[in-house]
Amino acid sequence: MKHIQESLEHYRDFKFFSLLEQNDKERKKLFRKNPKKEEDEKLAAQANRDVHEIIKKITENYKRMKSAGGGKIEVYKEFWDSQLKAKEALLKKDPGVKLVYNMYDSDYLVVGTVEAENAFVIVLKKDGAEGENPISKISSKEGYEAFKNVTLGVQKDLQMAKDAYVKNVENKKREEEERQRREKLDGFLKEEKEDKK
Image: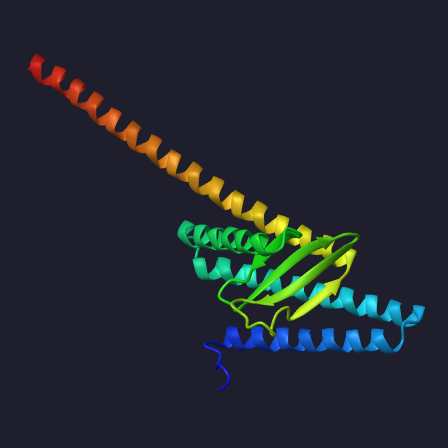
């Protein structure tokens, strides 16, 4: 019995990554049949297009997370923690893992690995069965670098959100301290005026 997707976004993710998996299988078949230079170039171009589609999907996913979070720091923190946990778990299995993007509210992970001279962008299904993973494994140094830039951008954006939150909390704390100091000073000044009467 197939799992029914829980939401429209889950269905869209499933559809997107299923198509990607199909492209990956076709790419492997073509490579086995025609290892000519032209075919290799076509396969490399398709791999780069696939990686760029994955990056577009990640960018949309991150925007959706920010929108759903409504600027609440708890959502950002939860998202960041999920990124760290996913990377930690994958590093235990494969020390070649360099980058991880744990898709928000989705059943998929996107991973960047470096193995010897090759760089890969890999799509995995979270908690996938033995035969399901990887959904797609794309060898592309250019794609890996683009994926790296996106994940670094996400990290930088999350750090900026954290810094802004900390600054806001500190400002509110200073404002409260100033308000309390002012109340005490006003109380002292009023007391002096009352004594003169």
